[in-house]
Image (tube, rainbow, N blue to C red; front, side, top):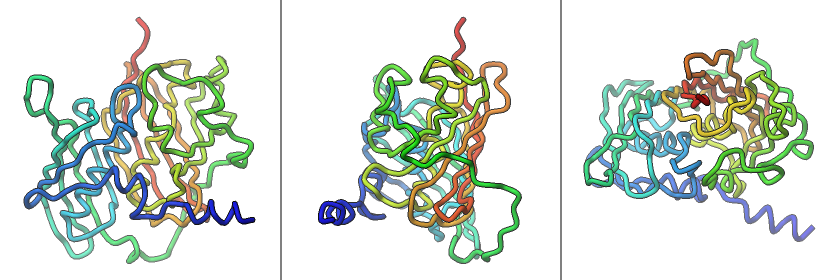
Length: 287
């Protein structure tokens, strides 16, 4: 009993967690922010796209008069590296219920040239002001309980190189979407998992931007291994998530021409659909 109480007390809280520290930005001048991108959120040799989206989302939440992301659309231009970066924001419109802004993240290449890594256009509002009226045909994904699912520690690394981001997450993958790990991919293009942060921090709107891009790529279930870089990612945050683990479901219906889409749904512990996203990603097919 005492051990359980100690573990509960050690849980990180929103605003005081590794995720918060690693996405924190420093205001340098009006609209311009600095950050050191953490190596703890890398996959292969690049910084995870969901983590990057949360970093820019935090900067826009500071620059805009509204605090909550409603819709965030990002184009990933070049792969980001751990280390110093600059974010430049611009307020496009400040309305009564919605504000729109754009932001770009820049780093320097090996020759000292400034390179734009990611560009975002987003609208922010106040999620707590939305009416509590839900009319939906969407249903939460059927995922076995966490103790009947599997984490990254239960199998081989899916890709070569760094997968440091998995150490910061608490992922429990649905066995029905793990055929790729056993050498028998299903061909269905589905991935489902329980999602949380490893230090126990509950989800908030900003961490939902990470959750939609945290699972293994659906390409693995098509029998394709290796890095699947994001080209474009749009996230819709629908409401503030309740405390507790999230369930994430991702599906791909069409892989063609070396590109695929990933449609994600994120559900909270009250069976509420809290975020949706669509991503276009590039697949590196064997020649």
